[in-house]
Length: 446
Image 1 (cartoon, rainbow, N blue to C red):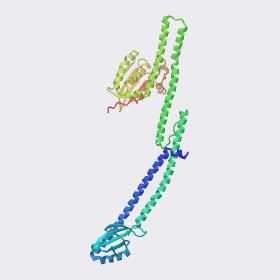
Image 2: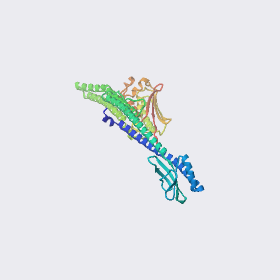
Image 3: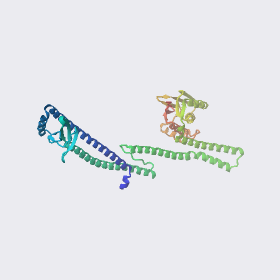
Image 4: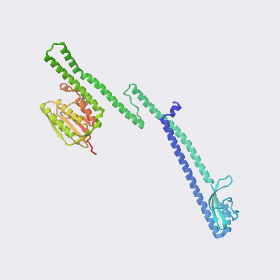
């Protein structure tokens, strides 16, 4: 990779920013340590010098100038401190410390090319001045050592930072390249290909997981579209063929007016069947887009179940079947009232149409823990476990159901409505018969 291209990468910029911030932090810490160290050493030195000056001032107060000069002469050979006494005329009476100013307090003196002296001056009676000083060489050496240590540390930080930056950039670009290659493969037509996901699961891996889930969803939708296309071609071929045959038969044969009316009525019935199938497909597509979710309102599911049950009970009785309902009142959820009504209707209608006479159909709505549970069960022939997932697919019909009216889309619509409402639909064995269990989250007013 060319240097200019590498410098423009986000990885390099982030690494450079990180290195710059780290260096600034390191320098700030170094400056703080340097000044704290110098301040601490100066404090200790000044405390020691000031204590010594106070002692000599006390000696002067007791024994006068002669006692002070004698004490300085003795101490200057044994102590590390330097001393000086200035007379009234600015002449130096004792000690090696000279050139200090006749001014009380702290002073810093430069003695030749050597280190600075920290000098504490005390005013004595009769316009005499006492000075006690100590070399700052140790402080200067310590400060120099601190600076050298941090300069060495900066070099180490630069080496590690640059090396780490190149390593991070290489690792980042390698992962980006892997994602790019996988994306190019998908664009080229390999829809089963997925983005690589590492075990450490960093932010890019989490993004790759989400994109893979999106690709899985898109793949499922494409498979569904293909399956629907095949199912439409298969299931609508028969009614369209019958319609074509009857129309051709009506054209070829001389028919009476009543016979023409019979053919037209038959063709109209076939047309209505085809239109109903397409209407159901469009209904499923509309539900699966989720556009109806934006209009969700609190819906009293108990009233819907009761209303649909009352409407279909006479239909069931005409066929020698009974519907028994146990409905807990005032159970609500956030949803679409029209779709939920169609859901209950499809489930009950399916149970009525595909069961023999003397069948008992039970519908139960209640709270199960923190969930709404709707159960529709019958004691009919049921559905074998291997076929239960298939009956939720579009156009799928069991062999025993092919003689009954319908297009195999009732349960598909029901499944789509349940999914739109974030519910769960299970088909279970009722021993005998079939039990459909629907679970929803109840509406929370708070």
